[in-house]
Length: 389
Image (cartoon, rainbow, N blue to C red; front, side, top):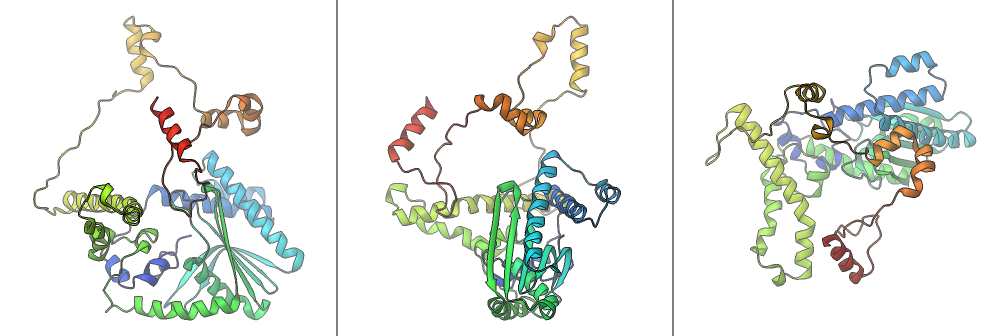
């Protein structure tokens, strides 16, 4: 669950560790809950209920009562089931070595010894003799999240360590991101000593971020990966995105390979920055009456649509003598919809031999991307030719 009441939240740690001034700046922007946030909340609640059912903490009645008000899609059901299986497997592994190992779900974790008033909620926390494991469910599919040097997970681990080290003598800490919609399971294991050493470092950053006199912002990748609310109006962020102006829009042939790589690295972030500023300006102009020189708010273009359901429109036309062939369009459903209809096994048995996945169009990505590189430039050119033809 989101730690919405913590000023220096664990989820925002990447941001305030690198940019202490962001805390002050963000307080000028309201939180805007999204449908994606609610979707994530639903997935967490479903996953929690499934685990409590599997560990016999819930019976069937209590389980159904827990999920009856949750908007659950078929995909969410599958993803939550996978999360449940993963957590139970990790818990069973701990039980084999420590019969009195414990599993805690949606556990409040206090790390205020390192961050002023710091607390958060651990999705799944497993404690065994000498070992601590934090498992964090990420339901989003926009950005792949890594557990390596992840400050949110490390803060959760510090909170769990503070609470349980006296009982279990924790020496090793494992932190895992479970992100099912991107097939991403990322883990980091460190010693308790290294975690505590990191905690002392983050303590200094937290004190700086919590100081209301600190207002200077430092831009970097943490602005985007930390989803800073102040990005649309942050001067430091804008200056960072305008850094490409040093190239003065020279023709690509005049740029070095290093300069082109820099443009590629920044292009997606610049596009996102422009969208953020545009959305922010529209919100300010339309809802708050802010006037921007040379701009005005108008009604956007829209497409015509029927004011009645398609079935009623079709009946009106057929009553007038038009045939269904003239007014209706029929085609087979897409692969995903058919697979949901048949179930994965039946789909594979019936249509498996008739499914193909053509190669994707060549695209440039960061070298850290998990996909294998296309080894042949000639093959890439041939793919482009086939795509054009």
